[in-house]
View 1 (cartoon, rainbow, N blue to C red):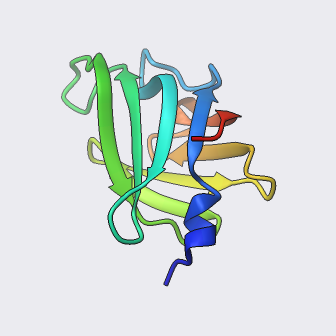
View 2: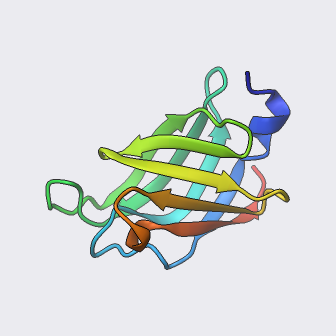
View 3: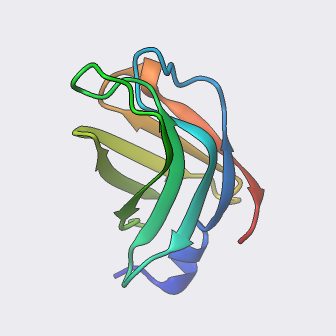
Amino acid sequence: MIHCSQSFRWTGRYKPDSKCNSDACCCPDGVVTIKNGPGNELSISTGLSGPNMFGTCFFQKEGSINAVPHGDTLSTSVYGYKLTAKISSDSMTITYTNDQGSKCDGTLYKISEL
């Protein structure tokens, strides 16, 4: 079971780095907002840019997913691809990997609390 203090570590507004290749991957576009969701879930919302698995681009102003963190990691699916994220011990950065390969990986940097 996730304790409130563990999920609270994740909440905030984050700015993505430019490592994720939006020519090949669905990447965060703009600020990523992570809020406490229902139950133990986190609600993660951001704009997305890049091609989806059907080869067409999704340019969304706002999309959101819910995911349950397990301590300092969480795993979820975005457009059919597995996304794994890990938050730093100081809660200031989140690194994420995607099963499409390193071209779709990146880091989120906390810019503010909620």
